[in-house]
Length: 123
Image (cartoon, rainbow, N blue to C red; front, side, top):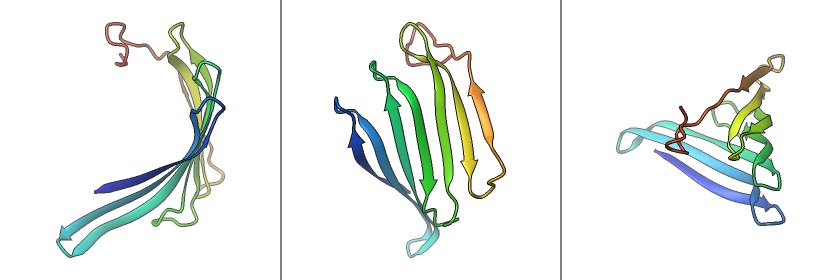
């Protein structure tokens, strides 16, 4: 079972959420009285939007993990490019973690195309 509590911490000048905190707890039982999984963590997300409501950049930080209390994992997403319909066609993800401070992972996603027959489906 996964339970999440979502709290919006800040909004921009037109009422769009720009910072949220998600508290997640995952549980499972092998029988009615014994937990075989009891894991929790927090995720804080911050987003900067342009005047069209598109993401300019975002940062997601995972922390307070019961399985690794000292670990802080960060994902930054930036360098968005949008098509004429306002859909993201590329961006750059940068991932870091205190578990491996010397490791920096960059993933450039580009060439994203959409199924024109169904706006919400990636092809």
